[in-house]
Amino acid sequence: MTSRFEPRLHVATRDELAGRVIAITGAGSGIGRAVALACAAHGAEVVLLGRTVTKLEKVYDEIIAAGGVEPVIAPLDLEKASAREYDAIAEAIGTRYGRLDGLLHNAGLLGDLSPIEHYDVPLWTRVMHVNVTAAFALTQVLLPLLRAAPDASVLFTSSSVGRRGRAYWGAYAVSKFAVEGLAQVLADELSGTTRVRVNSINPGGTRTAMRRAAYPAEVAESAPLPETITAAYVCLLGPGARGMSGQTVDAQAPA
Ligand code: NAP
Image (cartoon, rainbow, N blue to C red; front, side):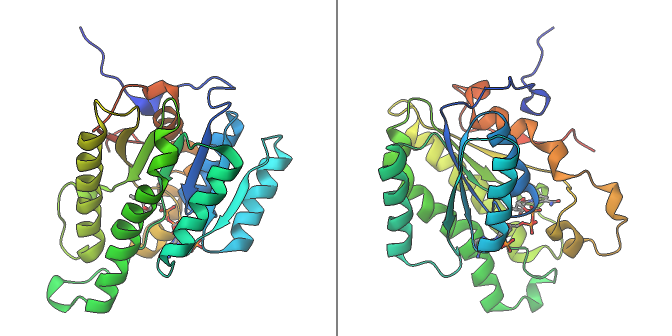
């Protein structure tokens, strides 16, 4: 009998990510915050990217209080950032570390839950920009630093509605399909010629602000806390998934 490799069941060693520099978007809250804390707890030097500096500062303090390596705060509004701001992030990471070992595209915008027929066009553009175009642009500007790392991992955040379309999920669902496509194209381009691996992850229903907005009538406790779903992220961003690329993974067991 062959056993399937399940990153969500990965048990990381204490120092599994030691010496790795890992950048995380949307690191100030929800799943991004939890993954940032988990990466730091396993020894990573974390670059906290996000738009709300006060939230990033709280995560910074939590990492320091837990005895983690000092993280870096990198403010970046993915909806509004200019090319110059992207370049500045790459320059700052390059100057400080000279490479990037992990990049988690976690930030996301839900938009409206409404029929395609009535979906607001400007909102559609914003959702596609934050969820897809910004992730593409950030990856592009950070690729030289990812190439400079011995075992770099790029991880995109998908969703179950990015694998099978569902009524009323509009731009969000379409953006997650695009994210899956972006991950596949990039993984194929980089395979063989670089040591950069590229995968996508579906966190599954998780107790965050986005989940509350999408399911306002749900009993909050029915979805797991972000802290409980980080194993697959640590695995994929670190040596636990070395050699794995072009895959899409679930952070939780299927419901
Ligand atoms: P969340 O708590 O709402 O977090 C979303 C994060 O994205 C926040 O840190 C937010 O920053 C950041 N963000 C939004 N717009 C941004 C912008 N313009 N620039 C920079 N950062 C921005 O939601 P979450 O549930 O943790 O979501 C994390 C990822 O998981 C998303 O990609 C989401 O699509 C995906 N996901 C979540 C679930 C779930 O059940 N929770 C299920 C499937 C997929 P601020 O805090 O500053 O607003």
